[in-house]
Length: 440
Image (tube, rainbow, N blue to C red; front, side, top):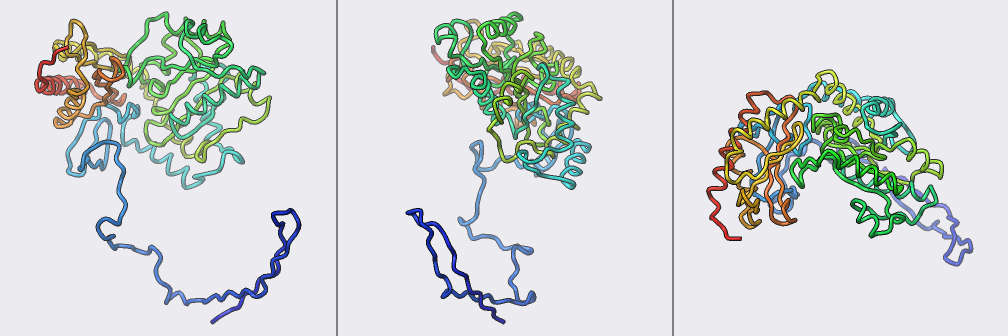
């Protein structure tokens, strides 16, 4: 059965700007209608295997031909496809605060996705998003916070920096565009050009839980206020109880102008981050017009529903206090065990964010050279013993310097804390034993 389709003449504008007419009456298209029974299947029960070399593959984050295949997780434990269990002393990437396998979080996710999975933030708001902003706002160390949700920490930081720039433009101060450190750098750069100071309250992966002196953040805040510079707290890793307080800045009662959060906001169950801007920042920016910024998956209702349930768990199970007490217990266990090893230069942190710095010389704190790959050796030895840890390098000078960072879920048991300390003790001893003595 055939059916001719004739096109009408179409008027359009030519490159000269004059209307032109394109006559398409001579064009004929033929449509052939095929009975359903004769139609070829479209991805219906596809079982064929692509020929070798023609299919896609994962571009992996880490080297290695045969990575572990994770299949399930519960509490502080993950299992691979071979049935072997691993104690997650890293909380993934210092993400899983409420623990793996939370049925109520999965249920909240499924219920919201089944009802409304996506609505673009430029047109719609949603009940879970409005409710989450109200609920999380009460916990934030930000005055009258306005929440801009995105898909993770990187997007949140990009949003924060654009917001800083938009704020200064809205106030008629377009010369402020730099991010600087402390007053000497501010004065050297010209205070009228500095837009914001950005920093982690307690430095996470790059310095392994390095806690600043008590007067540091209050002094930074005072300098910023005096020069009209915005204070941006990067709480991507430290937020939602990781350091034993709701947010890292709570340790010093400092209230930043902008706070950036992610990771623990949804405990890894959904990719979500957000920027919390003070009411002053929000009102100044929006009074000058809309904040022209956005991502496809910002303001997501499923992410908000997941974040609400994670927030409820943190509150009702008092997991912030658990992070503080269990973190102190873990550091004590590490001091009593691995702390005696010559290669351990420092054990530091707050709450369940704990860093262990490994050094070639404990007296001088001289680091191992990067070529020795001590961090990688410790990670491998721990994994062979069924322990997953987080790692970082370059903490000494940007190249050398080895760190092991621990950030287990807040539901970790005391027996598991003992196992973390004992296993890491053995793993470091094994790894360092394979490194020859190296000259300075």
